[in-house]
Amino acid sequence: MLPELFALTRRELLKISRNPQAIFTSLLLPLLYLLLFGQGFNLNPTAFIPNASHAQIVAFDIVYFRGAPNYYSYFAAGMVGFVTVTANLFIGANVIFDKLFGIFKRTRGTPAPSAAVFGSRLIAGSIQPILLAFFVLGLALLLGHTGLSGLDVTATVGALGALQIVLAIVMLSLMFATLFLMFGILLEAPQTYFAVVNTINLPVLLTSDALYPWGSMPQWLRNLSSYNPISLCVNVLRESLFGSAQYPYGPWTYLAGLFAWTAVLVALAIVLVGRALRPIE
Image 1 (cartoon, rainbow, N blue to C red):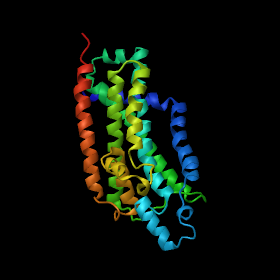
Image 2 (tube, helix red, strand yellow; image 1 turned 180 degrees about the vertical axis):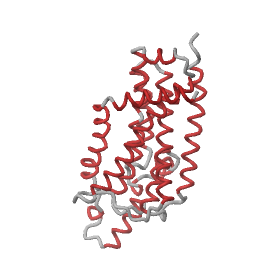
Image 3 (cartoon, rainbow, N blue to C red; image 1 turned 90 degrees about the horizontal axis):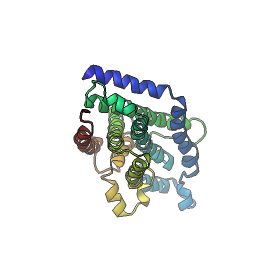
Image 4 (tube, helix red, strand yellow; image 1 turned 30 degrees about the horizontal axis):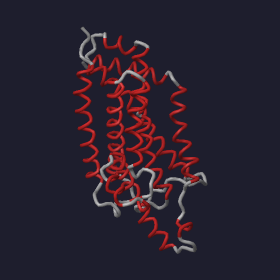
């Protein structure tokens, strides 16, 4: 199976690299979020506490931003999770359009096993969101050196912290790439696909703490957010970048929860996709 997997993965990567317009538009959305939404919605403690002292500002940041030095830093870490999920929406859409043009049927008609067909699209499709997530992280750090609001790292990020960040981003990307690819294979119409994934995507994003200040969330939403896979990923980033004093668990606990989510969805996808991609008689 490995030769077929490598060949099909290479073909999928070539398709992505030969579409610079898609690459440009995928970079444009996080760029706009970081430059416009993040800069314009940068919550300032002095707006809530006039003539606030330094001690009051620190206390505000601890309560509202869980130890992040400012909202933009809190927001930038959350944008990494946000972008990782939204960029994966297109992996299933590509399968839908390949079905419409007959490309997917021809691929299934080759001697390549169904596992190679699914695995190649999963690997190639998840690479772009992973790279996009690190682009967002790097750009947020760079903006802090241009006079704009940027990501301020207040903790020492060693090799272990960097590894935890990489694992969190990779697992989140693989989890949603698996989910959306599964829907792309199981569904036939583009309208149905986008209706289903938006029904899942928006509630998952809006019940996470990727964008909401933690201190402004009602208790029920905090409880729900604690089990959200995007929150689990973002918590790993924020603990590594800002310290873990305001979190009840360490990064490895959140990574374990993220792994559990990923394992369940991958197992579900293996069963459902295996049935859908049975060899054509």
